[in-house]
Image 1: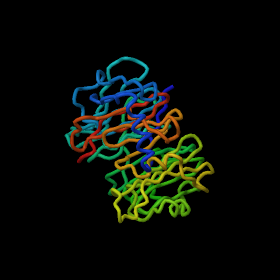
Image 2 (image 1 turned 120 degrees about the vertical axis):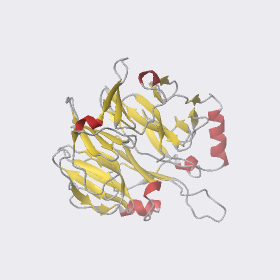
Image 3 (image 1 turned 120 degrees about the horizontal axis):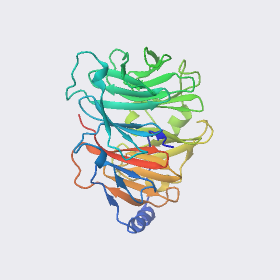
Image 4 (image 1 turned 90 degrees about the vertical axis):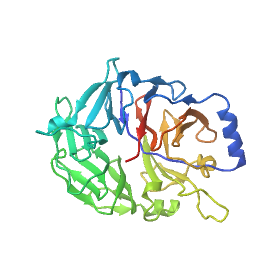
Length: 354
């Protein structure tokens, strides 16, 4: 089975003993040099296989998603490439503009978002808007895009088939598979949204909020915000993800610590009671003062964190770390995205620039 989980993530670092532990661990093996476009690992990053043979050379990757069997890669000119992970066939190319009459794709029609949901695959194309391809359908359909929405951070679907879309104006809900949208969360930019035990949780410019009634009403998770010192306009420093029944939140340090700084550093907390109480993660002692952390995630009971050019893994719940991947000679605005798909870990170099 090939399950798709797009995870948003986070973590922290400590003192001299932590530095020494990490240095010893890192020397054990040389990190994999990420020179390809898309790579896959079936053994938690110990070895990697390139998927480049299935894709055009020098593809500009802008978005990733997956369903049970396929990896989807979004690029320019409204194009996506589909790789069947259960076969060795070349990627199938699709152009989303086929859903529109008498319109030809241009370079600016970038596929900035792809989101795999239970009802199908949803794509957001710059200059065009939202499109959907239902499961087992052979064609794409244009959908209504709320007025003014030009950036979509996330689309998720609940057990009743309701769609929730995180945008720069908040969260919109659709009960008709994206044909119409109703703005439900009006507290400004929504950076991420996830569903946890039938509750909706949103991180954004005005903090972290929760809804227990399918988006009809929202309340700030005040105890969490107080614990991590979250204030307005900190949305880009906060990431939330889940693994099993556990919620995780990372608040990254906003700048490099200095002698006079009151910056608490990176903070990682987790909750096993649906967000009622939060506990500091053991990895925080090592990651607290670590600079450049972009995300943290869990894969097959191992902890990972990313920087813009490296992937680190811990086998002991974050006490020591091993550098398992490095990007050399990185181009401006280029880093990598990751997808956890069943037992597979997939990385793709991606252009994060304009």
